[in-house]
Length: 259
Image 1 (tube, helix red, strand yellow):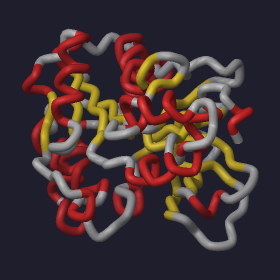
Image 2 (cartoon, one colour):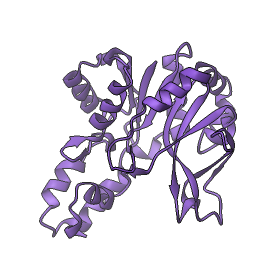
Image 3 (cartoon, one colour):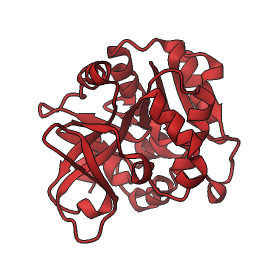
């Protein structure tokens, strides 16, 4: 099994939010965390999000030489430095060569580029770089149950968590009593609560092959599950931390007095 962290975004919303906090006592700290940095390298609790994900990856037995990052030209050097600190081979840090945020790929295209590089001879545990998932006790979710389920039945997995409001801002996942996905809707209007996609997947070789072979069609969608949801099962978690705005960074680091 391999692991892949998608980190090709530019964090433009984080950069844009910085000015709003210029007069707060934590401005310099926030700026050092965010300015010119990939969201995956923003610290949460003193260490980068990527380090938290790395601990989840190691816990299921994936070795360092099977861990990959797909990023852009702006953040490539930072991820090379991060990789060298953890014994991850330099060649495992993919660069999509994009410098200008205005010309960035949609997430699906970056996902397909990275999966094409990895091939489809082995399953891939795939993370969005700005996402952490936790159990009800507040600890990082142990992905061992998801991996064990895959080894039992060979079916791809997607992590989901329950939103009690504003589920329409996310990808809503419908599934049966056995946890088999029966439908996926990207940002469906009028759906306030439901189980939503946490952007962490375990992809079987067969599913990766299907995605690559249907890449042209897949790139017309915002989320791959809109097209290839069949054959997925869900893994439930208690909550998701999604770093999109400075406010998310503040809350995740318990600096709420800034708000």
